[in-house]
Image (tube, rainbow over all chains, first blue to last red; front, side):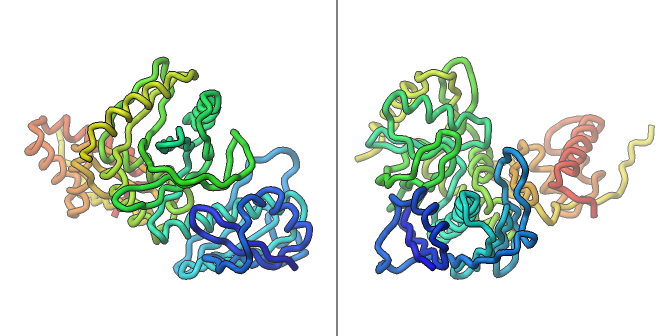
Length: 288
Length: 93
């Protein structure tokens, strides 16, 4: 059995109990995030082999959008997906994954589990993991939150043509940094794809909701609208009765510090001219 | 015309959380992992319901605060409550 330690967004996750085939799949996907085993992990994920597939959700026939079922207990969060089940301890984030998978389906199962574990672990250190697209111009970080169909992948495709740095079109983390927040990459990609690489954090400059329109434009929105967009975009935790009030409070703190604005955009690169201009003005107006 | 409303009470559903932000109301619907925003009048109505007032009392409070006639307040409050019940934000108690 093998052990592997991954690091992203300032947290280390150690996997133990991997079969060679499982390790190969994880390393192929997340290898760039591997860190020396001597470094102490923040979270331990134990993989337990359970060869009876009838204990788990069956593999579907044909293409499927991978989903997990979750149950929120006082001490544990239980997760079930195709070919696996898992339990995350709320206090320590120690996780046990039971699985009958060894092929590429194991990677899907593990990646979906890691999203949940990372969301909870990062929340415990003051961060928010947000269903979002994020990018940087090498100086400033911009996060675009929204559910499926909001335009996250489209924004990434357009930003890519402008040679901006794309973090992810799926999940990104906002982490407290001094008096403000920084944008941290997460190794999870949506339709935009890409293999995880290490990105340095950038100061969170723009916090944006997305709307489709014919002309690029930035609008303000009320505090309640802003908080609702953030909370609705925080997967797993916004459905957890144990943390949803704390999540709302943290969203209030975030939008008080960095107001959320709504970016209406067409499918062209003019959105960037609007953002670049507006946020340069905003930054120039800050007291030095 | 009989305009008396039922003495029904409503409360925030146990699977939802409600708070007021800058006058507007926000419901976090935990079952669905979704969030609803309601305007200032709606937030006022939910706050009245949280104070265990009947729908009849709420309509009276709305007419006093927002200078609308009783029929309009009754229609608006009824529609809001119906929508919030359907969304799982409120429950009858």
